[in-house]
Length: 71
Image (tube, rainbow, N blue to C red; front, top):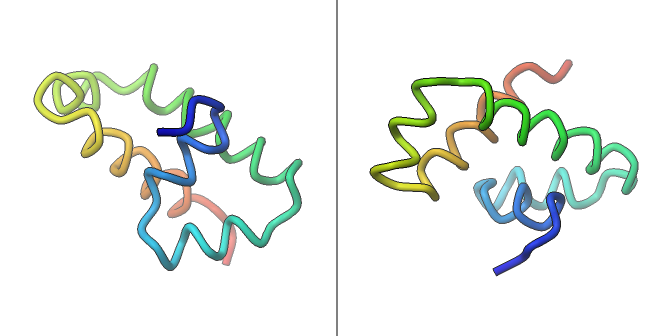
């Protein structure tokens, strides 16, 4: 399992999004991963989900971050 933020973020994505984000420049990947980590830390609903299923919480946070990105 990846330990760096970008690797963890990519692992939380579904395969199609993982490929799309993986094709972006490293700087963009790092920006998205930082936003993802902030989302995980800040959202109380994700805290509850994290207690039940950490991978599900990470995937939900990833979906939220990508949903905020401009088309």
